[in-house]
Length: 449
Image 1 (cartoon, helix red, strand yellow):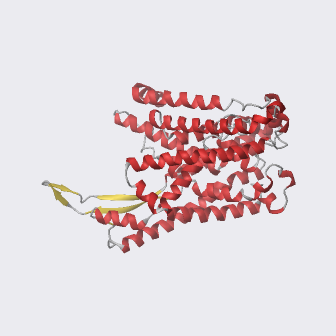
Image 2 (spheres, helix red, strand yellow):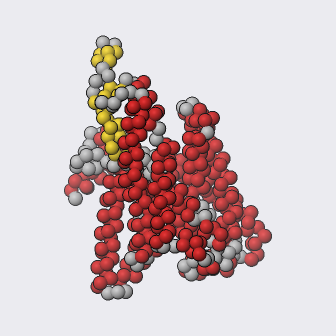
Image 3 (tube, one colour):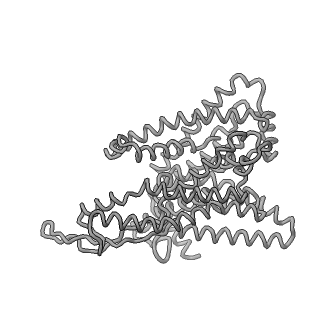
Protein backbone atom coordinates (compact mmCIF):
# COMPACT_ATOMS: atom_id res chain seq x y z
CA UNK A 1 0.00 0.00 0.00
CA UNK A 2 2.89 2.35 0.80
CA UNK A 3 4.44 1.71 -2.61
CA UNK A 4 1.08 2.40 -4.30
CA UNK A 5 0.77 5.77 -2.56
CA UNK A 6 4.37 6.58 -3.47
CA UNK A 7 3.64 5.71 -7.12
CA UNK A 8 0.63 8.04 -7.18
CA UNK A 9 2.80 10.82 -5.74
CA UNK A 10 5.35 10.23 -8.52
CA UNK A 11 2.59 10.39 -11.14
CA UNK A 12 1.26 13.66 -9.73
CA UNK A 13 4.79 15.12 -9.56
CA UNK A 14 5.12 15.01 -13.37
CA UNK A 15 3.39 18.18 -14.60
CA UNK A 16 2.89 16.95 -18.18
CA UNK A 17 1.37 13.65 -17.04
CA UNK A 18 -0.82 15.41 -14.45
CA UNK A 19 -2.10 17.80 -17.14
CA UNK A 20 -2.93 14.91 -19.49
CA UNK A 21 -4.81 13.05 -16.76
CA UNK A 22 -6.87 16.13 -15.82
CA UNK A 23 -7.70 16.88 -19.46
CA UNK A 24 -8.76 13.27 -20.03
CA UNK A 25 -11.00 13.28 -16.94
CA UNK A 26 -12.58 16.61 -17.96
CA UNK A 27 -13.36 15.41 -21.48
CA UNK A 28 -14.71 12.08 -20.22
CA UNK A 29 -16.95 13.94 -17.74
CA UNK A 30 -18.22 16.11 -20.61
CA UNK A 31 -19.10 12.97 -22.56
CA UNK A 32 -20.94 11.44 -19.61
CA UNK A 33 -22.92 14.65 -19.05
CA UNK A 34 -23.91 14.65 -22.72
CA UNK A 35 -25.35 11.13 -22.43
CA UNK A 36 -27.88 12.44 -19.88
CA UNK A 37 -29.42 15.01 -22.28
CA UNK A 38 -32.61 13.69 -23.87
CA UNK A 39 -33.49 14.25 -27.54
CA UNK A 40 -35.97 17.03 -28.37
CA UNK A 41 -39.56 15.83 -28.72
CA UNK A 42 -39.35 13.07 -26.09
CA UNK A 43 -41.21 13.15 -22.78
CA UNK A 44 -38.84 12.22 -19.96
CA UNK A 45 -41.55 10.60 -17.81
CA UNK A 46 -42.75 8.39 -20.68
CA UNK A 47 -39.13 7.54 -21.48
CA UNK A 48 -38.51 6.31 -17.93
CA UNK A 49 -41.57 4.07 -18.20
CA UNK A 50 -40.24 2.60 -21.46
CA UNK A 51 -36.83 1.95 -19.87
CA UNK A 52 -38.38 0.34 -16.79
CA UNK A 53 -40.35 -2.05 -19.03
CA UNK A 54 -37.06 -3.91 -19.69
CA UNK A 55 -37.51 -4.14 -23.47
CA UNK A 56 -34.76 -1.68 -24.45
CA UNK A 57 -31.56 -3.66 -23.99
CA UNK A 58 -31.86 -6.93 -25.88
CA UNK A 59 -29.75 -8.44 -28.64
CA UNK A 60 -28.12 -6.05 -31.06
CA UNK A 61 -29.72 -3.07 -29.33
CA UNK A 62 -28.18 -4.18 -26.05
CA UNK A 63 -24.72 -4.17 -27.65
CA UNK A 64 -25.24 -0.64 -28.97
CA UNK A 65 -26.52 0.49 -25.59
CA UNK A 66 -23.50 -1.04 -23.84
CA UNK A 67 -21.00 0.79 -26.07
CA UNK A 68 -22.96 4.04 -25.69
CA UNK A 69 -22.97 3.79 -21.89
CA UNK A 70 -26.77 3.53 -21.70
CA UNK A 71 -27.33 6.59 -23.93
CA UNK A 72 -29.00 4.45 -26.62
CA UNK A 73 -31.85 3.23 -24.42
CA UNK A 74 -32.19 6.67 -22.79
CA UNK A 75 -32.74 8.38 -26.17
CA UNK A 76 -29.87 10.77 -25.52
CA UNK A 77 -28.43 13.29 -27.98
CA UNK A 78 -25.31 11.06 -27.89
CA UNK A 79 -27.34 7.86 -28.36
CA UNK A 80 -25.24 6.61 -31.30
CA UNK A 81 -22.02 7.41 -29.45
CA UNK A 82 -18.74 6.68 -31.21
CA UNK A 83 -19.91 3.51 -33.01
CA UNK A 84 -20.54 5.14 -36.44
CA UNK A 85 -16.95 6.42 -36.38
CA UNK A 86 -15.73 2.94 -35.40
CA UNK A 87 -17.70 1.42 -38.28
CA UNK A 88 -16.25 3.95 -40.73
CA UNK A 89 -12.72 3.37 -39.36
CA UNK A 90 -13.02 -0.41 -39.72
CA UNK A 91 -14.32 -0.02 -43.28
CA UNK A 92 -11.46 2.29 -44.25
CA UNK A 93 -8.94 -0.02 -42.57
CA UNK A 94 -10.18 -2.98 -44.62
CA UNK A 95 -10.21 -0.89 -47.79
CA UNK A 96 -6.57 0.15 -47.29
CA UNK A 97 -5.73 -3.55 -47.18
CA UNK A 98 -7.84 -4.58 -50.19
CA UNK A 99 -7.58 -1.52 -52.50
CA UNK A 100 -4.09 -0.84 -53.93
CA UNK A 101 -4.81 2.87 -54.54
CA UNK A 102 -5.60 3.41 -50.85
CA UNK A 103 -2.46 1.49 -49.91
CA UNK A 104 -0.41 3.98 -51.94
CA UNK A 105 -2.13 6.91 -50.22
CA UNK A 106 -1.44 5.39 -46.81
CA UNK A 107 2.25 4.99 -47.65
CA UNK A 108 2.60 8.71 -48.44
CA UNK A 109 3.40 9.37 -44.80
CA UNK A 110 1.70 12.00 -42.68
CA UNK A 111 -0.14 13.60 -45.60
CA UNK A 112 -1.53 10.23 -46.68
CA UNK A 113 -2.77 9.42 -43.19
CA UNK A 114 -4.40 12.84 -42.96
CA UNK A 115 -6.26 12.17 -46.23
CA UNK A 116 -7.53 8.82 -45.00
CA UNK A 117 -8.57 10.35 -41.67
CA UNK A 118 -10.50 13.07 -43.50
CA UNK A 119 -12.24 10.49 -45.71
CA UNK A 120 -13.08 8.53 -42.56
CA UNK A 121 -14.75 11.62 -41.08
CA UNK A 122 -16.84 12.14 -44.23
CA UNK A 123 -17.85 8.47 -44.17
CA UNK A 124 -18.76 8.84 -40.49
CA UNK A 125 -21.30 11.56 -41.37
CA UNK A 126 -22.93 9.27 -43.95
CA UNK A 127 -23.01 6.26 -41.61
CA UNK A 128 -24.35 8.37 -38.74
CA UNK A 129 -27.14 9.85 -40.85
CA UNK A 130 -28.17 6.37 -41.98
CA UNK A 131 -28.12 4.96 -38.44
CA UNK A 132 -29.94 8.04 -37.13
CA UNK A 133 -32.78 7.39 -39.58
CA UNK A 134 -32.99 3.78 -38.37
CA UNK A 135 -32.95 5.02 -34.76
CA UNK A 136 -35.92 7.31 -35.47
CA UNK A 137 -37.82 4.26 -36.75
CA UNK A 138 -36.89 2.46 -33.54
CA UNK A 139 -38.15 5.37 -31.42
CA UNK A 140 -41.48 5.14 -33.29
CA UNK A 141 -41.80 1.45 -32.29
CA UNK A 142 -44.31 0.41 -29.58
CA UNK A 143 -41.52 0.42 -26.97
CA UNK A 144 -41.07 4.21 -27.12
CA UNK A 145 -44.41 5.24 -28.66
CA UNK A 146 -45.76 6.57 -25.35
CA UNK A 147 -42.75 8.81 -24.76
CA UNK A 148 -43.01 10.86 -27.97
CA UNK A 149 -44.59 14.34 -27.80
CA UNK A 150 -47.36 14.43 -30.43
CA UNK A 151 -47.08 18.17 -31.11
CA UNK A 152 -43.43 17.71 -32.06
CA UNK A 153 -44.04 14.80 -34.47
CA UNK A 154 -43.82 16.82 -37.75
CA UNK A 155 -40.28 17.96 -36.89
CA UNK A 156 -39.12 14.87 -34.99
CA UNK A 157 -37.43 13.01 -37.86
CA UNK A 158 -35.38 15.96 -39.12
CA UNK A 159 -34.34 17.28 -35.71
CA UNK A 160 -33.39 13.81 -34.45
CA UNK A 161 -31.23 12.97 -37.48
CA UNK A 162 -29.43 16.32 -37.29
CA UNK A 163 -29.00 16.13 -33.50
CA UNK A 164 -27.68 12.55 -33.52
CA UNK A 165 -25.27 13.32 -36.35
CA UNK A 166 -23.96 16.37 -34.53
CA UNK A 167 -23.72 14.33 -31.32
CA UNK A 168 -21.60 11.64 -32.94
CA UNK A 169 -19.30 14.23 -34.50
CA UNK A 170 -18.97 15.86 -31.08
CA UNK A 171 -18.00 12.52 -29.50
CA UNK A 172 -15.52 11.96 -32.33
CA UNK A 173 -14.02 15.41 -31.60
CA UNK A 174 -13.77 14.52 -27.90
CA UNK A 175 -11.90 11.36 -28.81
CA UNK A 176 -9.44 13.28 -30.98
CA UNK A 177 -8.86 15.83 -28.20
CA UNK A 178 -8.17 13.03 -25.72
CA UNK A 179 -5.74 11.57 -28.24
CA UNK A 180 -3.93 14.90 -28.72
CA UNK A 181 -3.99 16.48 -25.27
CA UNK A 182 -5.02 13.66 -22.95
CA UNK A 183 -3.86 10.18 -22.02
CA UNK A 184 -4.47 7.04 -24.02
CA UNK A 185 -6.35 6.36 -27.24
CA UNK A 186 -9.30 8.77 -27.23
CA UNK A 187 -11.83 6.60 -29.05
CA UNK A 188 -10.94 3.57 -26.96
CA UNK A 189 -11.21 5.57 -23.73
CA UNK A 190 -14.73 6.73 -24.66
CA UNK A 191 -15.85 3.17 -25.45
CA UNK A 192 -14.35 1.88 -22.19
CA UNK A 193 -16.06 4.63 -20.17
CA UNK A 194 -19.38 3.76 -21.79
CA UNK A 195 -18.93 0.09 -20.87
CA UNK A 196 -17.76 0.77 -17.31
CA UNK A 197 -20.66 3.20 -16.75
CA UNK A 198 -23.00 0.21 -16.62
CA UNK A 199 -20.85 -1.84 -14.24
CA UNK A 200 -22.11 -0.30 -10.93
CA UNK A 201 -25.77 -0.75 -11.86
CA UNK A 202 -25.12 -4.30 -13.09
CA UNK A 203 -23.31 -5.15 -9.84
CA UNK A 204 -26.17 -3.74 -7.75
CA UNK A 205 -28.79 -5.69 -9.72
CA UNK A 206 -26.76 -8.90 -9.48
CA UNK A 207 -26.21 -8.40 -5.74
CA UNK A 208 -29.92 -7.73 -5.24
CA UNK A 209 -30.83 -10.83 -7.23
CA UNK A 210 -28.51 -13.06 -5.20
CA UNK A 211 -29.29 -11.47 -1.81
CA UNK A 212 -32.92 -12.59 -2.16
CA UNK A 213 -31.66 -16.17 -1.81
CA UNK A 214 -30.14 -15.52 1.62
CA UNK A 215 -26.62 -16.45 2.72
CA UNK A 216 -26.19 -19.00 -0.07
CA UNK A 217 -26.94 -16.32 -2.64
CA UNK A 218 -24.29 -13.99 -1.20
CA UNK A 219 -21.74 -16.81 -1.38
CA UNK A 220 -22.64 -17.35 -5.03
CA UNK A 221 -22.17 -13.62 -5.65
CA UNK A 222 -18.68 -13.73 -4.13
CA UNK A 223 -17.85 -16.77 -6.27
CA UNK A 224 -19.00 -14.86 -9.36
CA UNK A 225 -16.69 -11.96 -8.49
CA UNK A 226 -13.78 -14.38 -8.02
CA UNK A 227 -14.53 -16.03 -11.38
CA UNK A 228 -14.69 -12.61 -13.06
CA UNK A 229 -11.27 -11.66 -11.64
CA UNK A 230 -9.85 -15.00 -12.84
CA UNK A 231 -11.25 -14.44 -16.34
CA UNK A 232 -9.71 -10.95 -16.46
CA UNK A 233 -6.32 -12.38 -15.44
CA UNK A 234 -6.54 -15.04 -18.15
CA UNK A 235 -7.58 -12.44 -20.72
CA UNK A 236 -4.52 -10.32 -19.84
CA UNK A 237 -2.34 -13.34 -20.59
CA UNK A 238 -4.14 -13.81 -23.94
CA UNK A 239 -3.77 -10.13 -24.89
CA UNK A 240 -0.09 -9.96 -23.94
CA UNK A 241 0.93 -13.44 -25.11
CA UNK A 242 3.61 -13.43 -27.83
CA UNK A 243 5.78 -15.98 -29.61
CA UNK A 244 9.31 -14.61 -29.96
CA UNK A 245 11.06 -15.56 -33.20
CA UNK A 246 14.86 -15.13 -32.87
CA UNK A 247 16.38 -12.77 -35.45
CA UNK A 248 20.09 -12.07 -35.97
CA UNK A 249 21.43 -9.06 -37.87
CA UNK A 250 24.72 -9.29 -39.74
CA UNK A 251 27.62 -7.19 -38.49
CA UNK A 252 28.34 -4.01 -40.45
CA UNK A 253 30.96 -1.30 -40.15
CA UNK A 254 29.42 2.16 -40.60
CA UNK A 255 31.63 5.22 -40.07
CA UNK A 256 34.25 3.17 -38.30
CA UNK A 257 31.72 1.76 -35.84
CA UNK A 258 30.47 -1.81 -35.79
CA UNK A 259 26.70 -2.11 -36.07
CA UNK A 260 24.58 -5.24 -35.71
CA UNK A 261 25.61 -8.71 -34.75
CA UNK A 262 23.24 -8.87 -31.76
CA UNK A 263 20.38 -11.33 -31.53
CA UNK A 264 16.92 -9.81 -31.30
CA UNK A 265 13.40 -11.17 -31.37
CA UNK A 266 10.40 -10.75 -33.65
CA UNK A 267 7.33 -10.79 -31.35
CA UNK A 268 4.28 -12.43 -32.90
CA UNK A 269 1.09 -12.02 -30.89
CA UNK A 270 -1.04 -15.04 -30.05
CA UNK A 271 -4.11 -12.85 -30.62
CA UNK A 272 -3.01 -10.62 -33.51
CA UNK A 273 -6.61 -10.07 -34.67
CA UNK A 274 -7.66 -8.52 -31.36
CA UNK A 275 -11.42 -8.18 -30.95
CA UNK A 276 -12.16 -7.83 -34.68
CA UNK A 277 -13.27 -11.49 -35.17
CA UNK A 278 -15.82 -11.11 -32.36
CA UNK A 279 -17.18 -7.91 -33.92
CA UNK A 280 -17.47 -9.53 -37.36
CA UNK A 281 -19.14 -12.64 -35.92
CA UNK A 282 -21.60 -10.57 -33.89
CA UNK A 283 -22.47 -8.45 -36.92
CA UNK A 284 -23.34 -11.52 -38.99
CA UNK A 285 -25.10 -13.35 -36.15
CA UNK A 286 -27.31 -10.30 -35.55
CA UNK A 287 -28.46 -10.05 -39.18
CA UNK A 288 -31.39 -12.49 -38.73
CA UNK A 289 -32.61 -10.55 -35.70
CA UNK A 290 -32.92 -7.40 -37.82
CA UNK A 291 -35.94 -8.99 -39.51
CA UNK A 292 -38.08 -8.21 -36.47
CA UNK A 293 -35.88 -6.38 -33.98
CA UNK A 294 -38.71 -4.08 -32.92
CA UNK A 295 -40.89 -7.03 -31.86
CA UNK A 296 -38.65 -9.85 -30.68
CA UNK A 297 -41.49 -11.64 -28.91
CA UNK A 298 -42.93 -12.71 -32.29
CA UNK A 299 -39.63 -14.13 -33.50
CA UNK A 300 -39.55 -17.84 -34.22
CA UNK A 301 -37.14 -20.52 -35.42
CA UNK A 302 -33.65 -19.45 -36.37
CA UNK A 303 -34.35 -15.83 -35.42
CA UNK A 304 -35.19 -16.94 -31.89
CA UNK A 305 -31.93 -18.93 -31.71
CA UNK A 306 -29.80 -16.07 -33.01
CA UNK A 307 -31.32 -13.62 -30.53
CA UNK A 308 -30.59 -15.82 -27.49
CA UNK A 309 -26.90 -15.65 -26.54
CA UNK A 310 -27.27 -18.51 -24.07
CA UNK A 311 -28.62 -20.92 -26.69
CA UNK A 312 -26.30 -23.89 -27.33
CA UNK A 313 -26.66 -23.63 -31.14
CA UNK A 314 -25.93 -19.90 -31.01
CA UNK A 315 -22.73 -20.46 -29.02
CA UNK A 316 -21.60 -23.28 -31.35
CA UNK A 317 -22.16 -21.29 -34.56
CA UNK A 318 -20.70 -18.19 -32.95
CA UNK A 319 -17.53 -20.04 -31.89
CA UNK A 320 -16.99 -21.46 -35.37
CA UNK A 321 -17.40 -18.02 -36.93
CA UNK A 322 -14.99 -16.39 -34.45
CA UNK A 323 -12.33 -19.01 -35.21
CA UNK A 324 -12.83 -18.58 -38.96
CA UNK A 325 -12.72 -14.78 -38.81
CA UNK A 326 -9.60 -14.93 -36.61
CA UNK A 327 -7.70 -16.78 -39.32
CA UNK A 328 -9.15 -14.54 -42.04
CA UNK A 329 -8.36 -11.23 -40.34
CA UNK A 330 -4.90 -12.42 -39.25
CA UNK A 331 -4.15 -13.31 -42.87
CA UNK A 332 -5.24 -9.80 -43.92
CA UNK A 333 -3.14 -7.85 -41.41
CA UNK A 334 -0.13 -10.19 -41.05
CA UNK A 335 2.07 -10.54 -44.14
CA UNK A 336 4.96 -13.02 -43.63
CA UNK A 337 6.37 -12.18 -47.07
CA UNK A 338 6.63 -8.48 -46.22
CA UNK A 339 8.33 -9.29 -42.92
CA UNK A 340 10.78 -11.61 -44.70
CA UNK A 341 11.62 -8.91 -47.25
CA UNK A 342 12.12 -6.32 -44.48
CA UNK A 343 14.50 -8.66 -42.65
CA UNK A 344 16.47 -9.32 -45.82
CA UNK A 345 16.64 -5.60 -46.62
CA UNK A 346 18.06 -4.89 -43.15
CA UNK A 347 20.55 -7.79 -43.28
CA UNK A 348 18.56 -9.79 -40.74
CA UNK A 349 17.85 -13.51 -40.79
CA UNK A 350 16.29 -16.23 -38.68
CA UNK A 351 19.05 -18.60 -37.45
CA UNK A 352 18.94 -21.89 -39.32
CA UNK A 353 16.53 -20.61 -41.98
CA UNK A 354 17.54 -19.36 -45.42
CA UNK A 355 16.47 -15.81 -46.37
CA UNK A 356 13.66 -15.31 -48.86
CA UNK A 357 10.85 -17.83 -49.36
CA UNK A 358 12.05 -20.28 -46.65
CA UNK A 359 11.88 -17.45 -44.08
CA UNK A 360 8.39 -16.54 -45.33
CA UNK A 361 7.23 -20.14 -44.98
CA UNK A 362 8.80 -20.45 -41.52
CA UNK A 363 7.15 -17.29 -40.16
CA UNK A 364 3.83 -18.26 -41.77
CA UNK A 365 3.96 -21.74 -40.22
CA UNK A 366 4.63 -20.31 -36.76
CA UNK A 367 1.79 -17.83 -37.20
CA UNK A 368 -0.62 -20.63 -38.16
CA UNK A 369 0.39 -22.73 -35.14
CA UNK A 370 -0.14 -19.95 -32.59
CA UNK A 371 -3.29 -18.55 -34.29
CA UNK A 372 -5.28 -21.76 -33.70
CA UNK A 373 -5.05 -21.78 -29.87
CA UNK A 374 -5.49 -17.99 -29.90
CA UNK A 375 -8.66 -18.35 -32.01
CA UNK A 376 -10.06 -21.07 -29.74
CA UNK A 377 -9.42 -18.97 -26.62
CA UNK A 378 -10.95 -15.93 -28.31
CA UNK A 379 -14.06 -17.95 -29.19
CA UNK A 380 -14.26 -19.12 -25.56
CA UNK A 381 -14.06 -15.52 -24.37
CA UNK A 382 -16.85 -14.63 -26.80
CA UNK A 383 -19.31 -17.25 -25.49
CA UNK A 384 -18.53 -16.85 -21.77
CA UNK A 385 -21.43 -14.34 -21.31
CA UNK A 386 -23.79 -17.01 -22.67
CA UNK A 387 -22.51 -19.55 -20.16
CA UNK A 388 -22.91 -16.95 -17.41
CA UNK A 389 -26.55 -16.41 -18.36
CA UNK A 390 -27.17 -20.18 -18.30
CA UNK A 391 -25.77 -20.19 -14.74
CA UNK A 392 -28.42 -17.64 -13.63
CA UNK A 393 -26.25 -14.52 -13.86
CA UNK A 394 -28.32 -11.45 -14.76
CA UNK A 395 -28.09 -10.37 -18.39
CA UNK A 396 -26.42 -7.02 -17.67
CA UNK A 397 -23.71 -8.44 -15.41
CA UNK A 398 -23.06 -11.45 -17.69
CA UNK A 399 -21.70 -9.15 -20.43
CA UNK A 400 -18.69 -8.39 -18.21
CA UNK A 401 -17.66 -12.06 -18.13
CA UNK A 402 -16.27 -11.95 -21.67
CA UNK A 403 -17.03 -10.84 -25.19
CA UNK A 404 -16.24 -7.52 -26.78
CA UNK A 405 -16.69 -5.43 -23.66
CA UNK A 406 -14.12 -7.27 -21.54
CA UNK A 407 -11.57 -7.43 -24.36
CA UNK A 408 -11.86 -3.69 -24.96
CA UNK A 409 -11.59 -2.84 -21.26
CA UNK A 410 -8.49 -5.00 -20.74
CA UNK A 411 -6.80 -3.67 -23.89
CA UNK A 412 -7.51 -0.01 -23.12
CA UNK A 413 -6.43 -0.26 -19.48
CA UNK A 414 -3.18 -2.01 -20.41
CA UNK A 415 -2.45 0.60 -23.08
CA UNK A 416 -3.12 3.48 -20.66
CA UNK A 417 -0.99 1.93 -17.91
CA UNK A 418 1.81 1.44 -20.41
CA UNK A 419 1.78 5.15 -21.27
CA UNK A 420 1.81 6.14 -17.58
CA UNK A 421 4.72 3.80 -16.93
CA UNK A 422 6.61 5.27 -19.87
CA UNK A 423 6.35 8.74 -18.30
CA UNK A 424 7.53 7.38 -14.95
CA UNK A 425 10.54 5.60 -16.43
CA UNK A 426 11.48 8.65 -18.51
CA UNK A 427 11.65 10.67 -15.28
CA UNK A 428 13.71 7.87 -13.66
CA UNK A 429 10.92 6.83 -11.32
CA UNK A 430 10.01 3.23 -10.58
CA UNK A 431 7.43 1.71 -12.90
CA UNK A 432 3.92 0.64 -11.95
CA UNK A 433 4.98 -2.98 -11.51
CA UNK A 434 7.72 -4.22 -9.20
CA UNK A 435 8.81 -6.84 -11.75
CA UNK A 436 8.74 -6.38 -15.50
CA UNK A 437 6.99 -3.71 -17.51
CA UNK A 438 3.37 -3.29 -18.45
CA UNK A 439 2.76 -4.40 -22.04
CA UNK A 440 -0.17 -2.61 -23.60
CA UNK A 441 -1.84 -2.71 -26.99
CA UNK A 442 -1.15 0.70 -28.53
CA UNK A 443 -3.98 1.92 -30.74
CA UNK A 444 -6.67 -0.32 -29.36
CA UNK A 445 -9.34 0.88 -31.79
CA UNK A 446 -7.20 0.36 -34.87
CA UNK A 447 -5.48 -2.88 -33.83
CA UNK A 448 -7.94 -4.47 -31.43
CA UNK A 449 -11.41 -3.13 -32.30
